[in-house]
Length: 221
Image 1 (cartoon, rainbow, N blue to C red):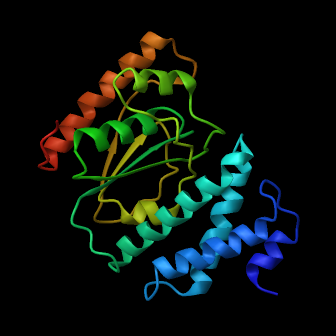
Image 2 (cartoon, rainbow, N blue to C red; image 1 turned 90 degrees about the vertical axis):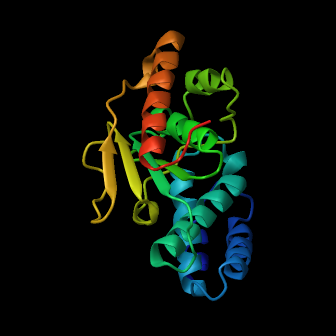
């Protein structure tokens, strides 16, 4: 009995016939990463990604899309870290506690203001079940849509792939690797903030992002 069968026969909920989905996703990603990772590695990443998001997903109907995105991005990050995929852009990881507010705002602002010249990821040391609605609304005010985003757990692969790791109140949760640049941005947590306070945090993040882009030699737009 293979690893996926063992995991799914324990009754993992959330998707009708999850074993079919997990096997299909493993086959899809095995084709995408052919010659880079063994099928056993991909199988493990798929199952780990499914079980991790299952614990925090408030709406199980989104699991298929989210697990697919999460597993694929983790494998891509691992391939970058190993040098199996060439990376011609700097990579930045934003980390906060819940990945529901500050790090999500920073990732969206950095992606938009760098015009695709930056690889951007975000994660949480203790991810929430969903994004803060006030954060989603504040970002929509400046034309950035976060409705398809979701909190993601912090994993070793995305840290290894990053050139810059920006932390926001998550303490020592982020592993330290030599050769990477670490920053800690002191920002208020918008979890219970008023809409005006969320906008203030959004503007503070924009200032930090522009400074970081300047340090990386990327002109912000």
